[in-house]
Image 1 (cartoon, rainbow, N blue to C red):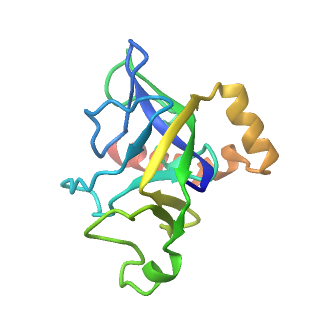
Image 2 (tube, rainbow, N blue to C red):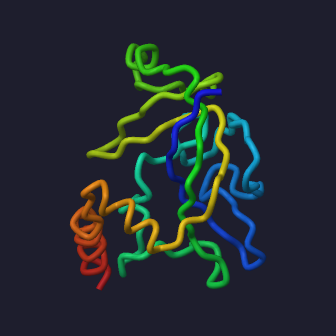
Amino acid sequence: MKTEIGYKLFEMNPEGKLFPLFIGKTKETELNKWLHAEYIPTKGFACRGGWHIGTIPSAPWLMSFDGTYKSQRSKYWKRVWCEVEYNANNNYDEEVNLLPKKCFVDKCPKDGFYFFKETGNRIWVITSDIKVNKILTEEERKQILDAEGFDEAKEFEPYKNAMLKRMKKGA
């Protein structure tokens, strides 16, 4: 299998087990094991089957007001970034770019991946299979972002400003 490296944010419970943030969030994600994507339509979320991963370990739109990645499940859980390998056997970019929503809406990619551009500059890799290689330390994550020239604080500013605006409206 041809593979590439990507990054995924998970929720980690107090026992150290990993779970996806939203879709399939009750199913444990094992380390060092190839996991096939399931098509799981979920109310409130776009139908876009496959494992969603990033090309860098950052998702500013998922940060808390203080600029950290806090769990939404419980104070005993935490969010952690992981390095993953993904199935890169087949690139479906040409096929999905011809589709109205620029993604598969009724299935997962089969034996491969595609890039999906969302609002702003968010780019996801959507793939059929991943293997979680390791949980990144915050130092490792920052080193990767620095090597990519990615300024997470700057990228977070519009989201923080939107939160401030909502807070002022509620006051």
